[in-house]
Image 1 (cartoon, rainbow, N blue to C red):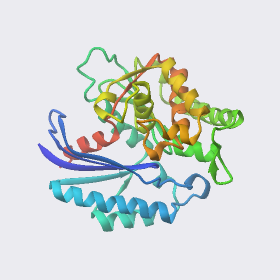
Image 2: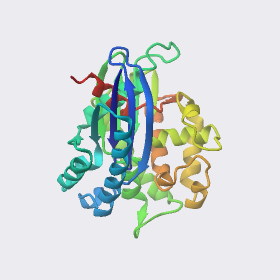
Image 3: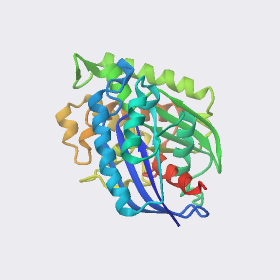
Length: 316
């Protein structure tokens, strides 16, 4: 076993996994898994730059994670940064800050690399189970982008498009500096049109409709699953490999888009950092299911973070 630390820094959250990984079998044993909402992508779609306060929130989380990594004695550390830091003009400030705190160079990966990590993390456990038919379509709905990857035992096609829960919220649901609660029909229609255009783009290179199992990743999907399961609190074990029907996703999405901030915040399994963006994230998931004809989504708690850890263990 190789003890590794993997960090996934996205548009909305930064996550850490410290695990023992068997590089031959793919077995992964969690030692510490945590997530912090830092909203690194705050305003990036509008300004093209990472906000100073967003950088500081991210660096504070990195300092906390550095202590955890040292405590567990990880042999290798890999830091992968995704959509927000790809888009920002001042991403060098981000790189320097991470390097000074953690001692590693953050890898600002391409959308295709991000999709490959997500696919590996999400499907490693599914391969031996007949109830999950191949090929898989893995969709990772992040804050700034969504990754689509189709594959069976290997990746066949992948594409990243710029729709995510934070980007869609900031682009369509914010008026005068505040999120509209609830959004208007016009705002929802504009958001839906943006998502459909992104799906058109994804479908040019990824055969979305060929998949027999839709696997959904990341906070928007897992939160929808937690609501569908009517959990009294967020429960990763209950959510992992749960199945949510198309009808239930549609019902939950419509409810979230009609609700106020207070109503969403009162959902027992809702993370406070997702209250303002969950409606947009759920709509992305619903749109994907409608486009592909999926009757259900298989929800995975293992995603890009697990894929990063596995590939880190494989490195010489």
